[in-house]
Structures are given as C-alpha cells and as structure tokens.
Image (cartoon, rainbow over all chains, first blue to last red; front, side, top):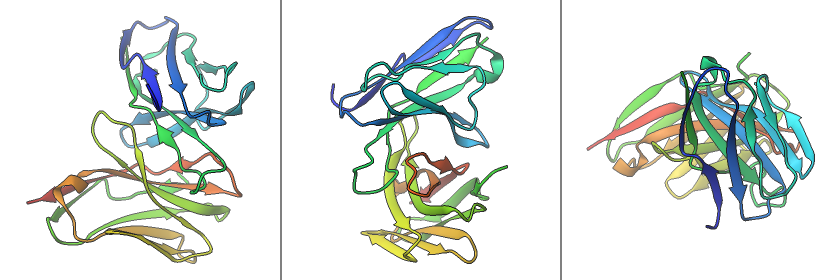
Length: 115
Length: 112
C-alpha cells in the first residue's frame, strides 16, 4: 500500500513484555518520527530519525528503543512494557524538501494497552 | 514544561459561524507553525502553516494568524461545517528543524 502504515493497529500486552510496533512508509522520506498521544498531553515525540542509521531522542524516550536500518522502516520497541506506556502511538514521516517545512504525514496509529 | 499550549480542551460552534482555535507558545526560537486536524481512529493530517515572517496565511475557509509579540497564533474557520468536527493540534518548530512540538489539542464540535 502506498503511504505510511503501522502494525499492529491494536495490541494488548502484559507488564514486563517486550513489544515492537512497526512503521513503514513508501515515499522514501528521509525523516521519520514516533509520537505517543495521551489525554491532556497531546502528541509527544518519543524518537525521530533524520536518515537510515541516524536516530535521536525526543521529549519522552525513556523505556523505548528505535532502529532504522532501511529508509522505509522505523520500528519502535518497548523493552519491558509498563502500564504508563498504555497509549496511542503514531508514526510519521516528512520530506525536508517538501513545500511546508515540518509537514509530517502520519500513520493511522497503534493503540497499545499494557495490563 | 509545555512549550506549546492550547488552553481550551473543547469548543462548540454553530454550523455556518466562525470557529476560532487558539494556541500560545513560550519558545521564542520557534519560527514555523502548523495546524493539524485529527479525526477519531485516524492519524493527524496537515491543515495549514505559517512562517514567522508572516502574520497571516489563508487557505480557503482556513486562516492562521500569528502574533509574535504575544507568542500567540489562532486558526479561524469560516464558515464552519459539520465535517470540521475534529481535534485540532497546533505545532511549532525552530531553526529549520523538521521535528515539531505539539499542543494538547482542542476538540471542535460543529452543531447543526
């Protein structure tokens, strides 16, 4: 499918388990981002990547790991899930050569529940 | 420390009237601002943006105003339509950066 996709769309896991959320984009955008959306906090940046093999922390990186071996994929791993990581996770991508600086294209989100 | 704030969690407007959504920021290094719209169970989608060298940008029914001295921006929707019912996020970036800082969002409801 063209665009940006996330899998799974819904996930329930137990405290302490490792979970990986997948993100795939077909535009070859150099930048990719992971956000979490929580009531009262809006969208908070977890990690981002400017290119393959280049990643950097965002506002709330603790408890998360990312990798980017290929331009089109940007998986997010929760190494040992905690209840506070229950949230909706959005992946996004952007092209710095685009018309509007900072315009990001978002995936549909993954709703993660940690029990 | 919330650098981008949307102080109204919700707003209800009559169809056909003007909707005004507000956003304040604290970081004076921000030089580019964007508004995103989000429907339930979907990702946010880009709506309109403005550079700090401008004070107004218009796109159809949507206009964004920027008041740099007050560190305030607003999104005006005229006329409001039922399909405009969504959560609206403002976002900001600084110094040419691609990463954004988002506000908490405002839920807009357009009543028929």
